[in-house]
Image (cartoon, rainbow, N blue to C red; front, side):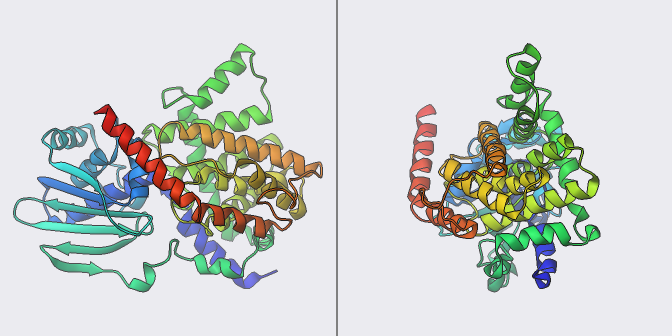
Length: 433
């Protein structure tokens, strides 16, 4: 066992698995706006935001918590007027209806604009606020909360160390010497006290799931599953419970519920996908607290490991890769060993690779539930000794090679897919105006 990596694993999970209120792309813009307003020391009269194409894609159609509205302009406005600049991805946790009303007035007065920045960064948000006398600019890049510069009236207030702003995900280097089996061994053998913090993922995402099951949010995927169980059109049981409870959490999150998700790799949906299926299986087998914690840690760290090979945002749906983390925890809970886990992950790569990310919006709950369904299917196949083999498609015999093959596709050919997706979305949006 590579115990010398364990502290790095713990630090990585603590950095990448954090509470997030709302979709993290508009929240990143809100955070930049909140930080800019704090430096301005007064409420702005004008707000300009410039974001990378990927951030624009994920911010155009998603609800902003507590506002009843979608899109980046309201996120920038309410973040500037009422955001907590010290709260990270929970920047909007204290906003009030009065704050939202004032933000809407700014939008009505055309005091807020959002455009696409010509930058190479996958994740980039530049927010400029002005009160007529002073102007402050805040830039966040490469990670949802990583501030790289703050300027006031053209003078630098803060410039980040370039060495800490060049990597897509801080801490990626730890995975250069890691294989999937190292994560499996860590999750099973690390002292419980060192990893018990991951249990917060259970409490936050389960609360979000319960909120989604009220049927008040989004496409009501989770609630629809429940209603059809009640009608007798679906049977209850493990599969239905996984789909019902996982999609319900995404329903609530994507439609602006004022409850945080425990995120993974900068995404609430990825956090939900890595948490809820594992929890449902743990409850189904009556797992004790330690067993559930180890399964959750295995899931979340495996999801981070898989995502570390890919751009932070891409045309490949992140819920699919997060669910490949979940399948590790689920397979182990159901009695599988590492060989079964590798089979399950490879089968998922052979199954759902290529599901596109066409922005954050209510229908993400469908992709979350599809990914969860693929995960339990792959887990059960693996436990029966069946997998997608290395002779098929992009899947290799070795799980780590399969992960790299999928990531090569995401970072390579699918970058043009991303350009095409955004082009369709922008032109569709223009046609509706």
